Length: 243
Image (cartoon, rainbow, N blue to C red; front, top):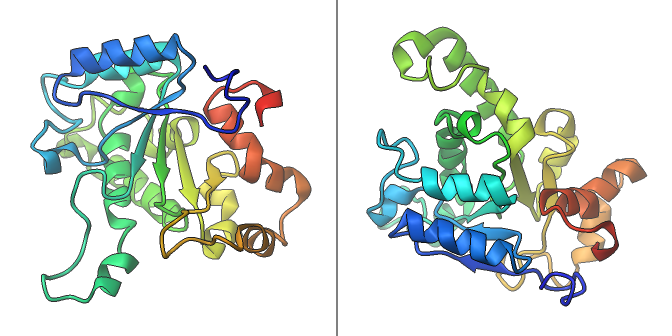
């Protein structure tokens, strides 16, 4: 399927989240057809589903299938069907400013869940979450792990500092984050990809190329190639010629 699409359109599959075993079957079935990614909820409890901390490891069949097939778990802002805000009467601009908050919570969930320990090939990606906030929360998670893990419930499940797992397993996507690009050394030059956010009002379209060039003008060519092309190819394990 991927080769027939010639790299222009790559399918992102929707799976039956109400049944992890069936979701795992769909992952394997579609991986055999060339599908490289599936959609998941950033915060499943918002949908009335178990969290990724579930003691019975509710989601492990799905995670195992993604680990086995190299299928990326993708999460879009609001994919828990709940967007952040401060009150019912707060203007929409408040929620729009806070769109990354759910992504923050989701990333912390994943880093402290032990999932990356159990499934060492598992990869996740966040759409529209931006990237500038990442270094602080990696630092904070590492601090909590170092000082509080004895009573914090992660001593057995997370044997290494949480940031260790971020750099090997997580990709962040951005469409407007000059601050994040100025701090790539901490965000991770191999962990970010550029997007256009078309057709939302937040989008950099129809000036996507100009926006991308302006935000990356201080970066070297190798870094720009990674952000604009190479990291996505590596994330999805695509043939180089499809990029």
